[in-house]
Length: 367
Image 1 (cartoon, rainbow, N blue to C red):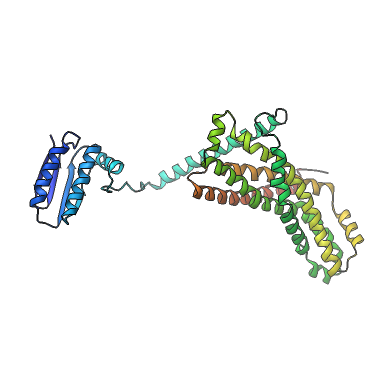
Image 2 (tube, one colour):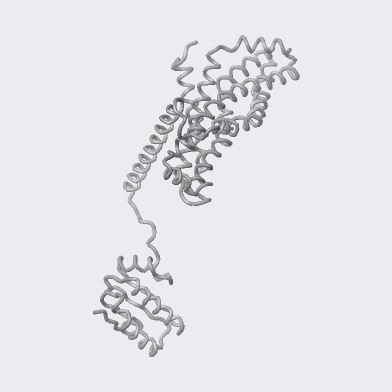
């Protein structure tokens, strides 16, 4: 039996406020409010163990009646079960949802570690699926759109050529210590410096950074949009694996086009250095070319190409990973795209450092 009692400016509700008790409670409250002359009213819910949607509607009506008579009303001491019901059903904001829980230092460390392990596991699943379906696609083409490899090669690779070429030319144009070498009569060694740096380091890494900002962001935003609009769920309902259908063609395309663009980046960068060498250092084209040929070894070119392939895989996997784990709508797509570019650039630089240690200090390749 639910009861309503009052003392001065406080109403005490006792018992469960359910659908069968709402009507008498409302009549009792209206009788009290008609004779109440105060400016503030407090409703104490400490003795209400639970309520339902009808009880929440009753409390909403209590609020409206009090406000109609210019009486400020407050609900206090609501139990957790009652508060949850109020949050779920009240249209008047009678109770605010609980704020973020306060965790201890060790709980935060444990939660962060657990989440990092989950993220790593998701990444490993994506890498495994991409590797498996990419290898399977070489012998069985089902599950991949016809002509998508060519389309993605154009979008990811060919359309990126102008910006890659421009940046490579400018890098080759400035990547030298021309003034310093000229002081010692060693201007010709500009060719050695540029040839080795462009093939080993600058060509692959600058191409990768351009790809991460241009193609990596495109991959992340496309997949994130598909997730938000539930296109990936539609693919699953048609028995099509999203990784095989969406990611694998991009994986093929970037694996082919990035080494090719890296080679072009190397050549254009060396050409840019040749231009400044001819115009500023008075180095003839033929001597410059001969110096480049003498300075380069096969290992330098293979090292650059090996790096470009690793960078390509990092970019496509990172873009797909952040695309698939998007949450929310358009804002989530933007956040996923930004996170993808930042992570791709960081991982490319990290991989370059590790590969540099392997190739140059660890003697990973001998040619």
